Image (tube, rainbow, N blue to C red; front, side):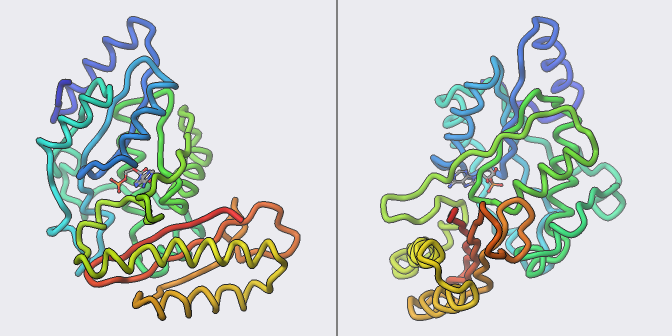
Length: 279
Ligand code: AMP
């Protein structure tokens, strides 16, 4: 599998495939790949003849004091895994390639409203960074389809909304969360956990599953959320939010909402874990 770092080579390869009438899928990532990322590659293969993955640890989506410098960078192993999973091309640009005027000077894409809730409230500017880099990657690769994990549910909605608002000609596909056998959602940040924290971490998913069952049983939303926060704290996690939301807007769920999702974030040692479940 080829790895390309520069924009002209990327465009030339994509143009070559297009000239052959092939469909192209894009899977954007920050690398340190695990089975969750590889399931996106597998799903991408079902949608297109050619699969492009990108690896870019995007400085624009990290706040001051967050883990940009510490974020695991494992390009050689990632490249092996992508090749074995049937990816056709890896695009791994440097920061100066995507942000030639510096990240401060770069045009930004903002999806208002959705970007300010939940993780956006805890990480101001995060979703502007995400929307900006994904918009740029979509313009560079011009894929027919781009795939994103439901694990980052708010991110998936922000991207769907950006694509709709800016009329970008791409189909966005969400892919179910891949979990460890004990329920913990796979994440590059799980590597920050000590063995003791790793044993505590599945409490996040278990609290969400219990909350979903309580909502299905007719439990009152505020009390379900409180119980879940208490369960997280009892398990040694520091809850950031637990919220039952309307699945399409992430507004606080009302009894009339037919599709609901419960989202949570919690801190555990050096890691900030997020997860969600459908009700
Ligand atoms: P990241 O490298 O964390 O930016 O993630 C790249 C893509 O992989 C995003 O679309 C994520 O939502 C997706 N992803 C991350 N973890 C998982 C997982 N456990 N299951 C499915 N998709 C995931």
